Image 1 (cartoon, one colour):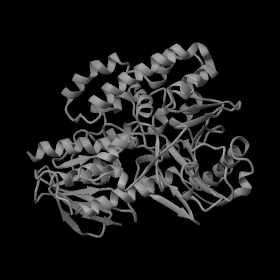
Image 2 (cartoon, rainbow, N blue to C red):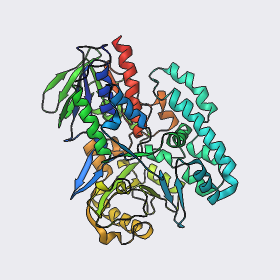
Image 3 (spheres, helix red, strand yellow):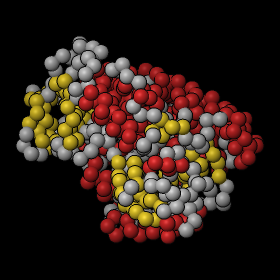
Image 4 (cartoon, rainbow, N blue to C red):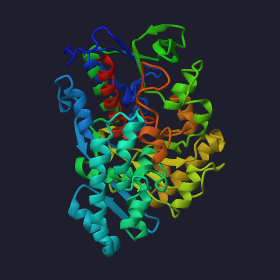
Length: 502
């Protein structure tokens, strides 16, 4: 076992709640500082929303499928003098995404600058100068929003006050769609370049314009897929934890956080077992941490009333299926846009009482990059439909099978011919599943939505203001959802642990 790189906290115990990417990354960073680390997860496998679903020889990644900042993964192995490439190879994905319109046209997003210009010209030649300006704007947003502030702790208002002038200068107070609309006139191109907030649970017309930096992030660092799927990445990180002496306990359900005199003292499991700790890093859904794990604490900021008034992301219906044939012309990541755009988004993010009639879908075909995700001659897929979260009151026991049939019909008509006859295995997840298995408030797919007034200082702080010794990582915390955001939240906690250990 390699020695930690520092000894700031020798003999001090940290408990990590949740074995998603945020919890794994935070546990590794705490271990590298010298803490004794125990990671607890209530499920029977690591990964959280990145766990693996296996059926009949098919491998399905349950959640995240897009790797856009591989350097964040490299850092975790490098903490202990290891090379990520020796354990988890990453395969390039091209195109990054194929966006298909109802009229049959498609737009391929890639990292090739000339090819991207060609795609823009193919849709609207007059928009090429605006596209170039938009790329420069995205690069500046990346330099400021990601490189300068994403790993910066935002639990102090002074930090927000320092950052706010630059946020305003770069139109971060406006929406992603408003930034795209400033540069592009063609409606189809506006849709293509404003879709990225949906990957982190945001409404493109309401999400902070800072998220337009995703364009530059993907163009600069590429889009990747782990050999063996995201589950192989989880397995590689799990093995790294065990090599470094991190104790991993699965099916360990934390019932509440223990605290005394305003400070965390440990955790209590649902079995009644208690575990002492000098600090706790929670990778659970941020609202649930306060509402469910600290029920007796008199909270000053995150009161039940405050939690109820937050704006939560949409829900997700995820349909996993394997086929007895291959669809060679279908890209790894395909987005099937519906006829409507803003109207559909408003229904999904609002409090509608039913699933909209027309949907836009994200279709994931990992076997386009790694054929070993399915038996020979077969394809593995999942299709994700953004849907209203549980505030809608939709009865998913009734709605799920009906939606499944609608999705199959839509994919069969637009992308996967004769699909209904080709499916040989299937399963699905609904917002109710997210609520029950991940304890996600309202079954939201990405915790709280990334509006400006729910970002940075306004988002859940990585260092709790309610009780000392509690740190938060994951989608609901700063800097936000998506793998880059979740992994970066662990970097923020590393900085806070260093400061507090000193």
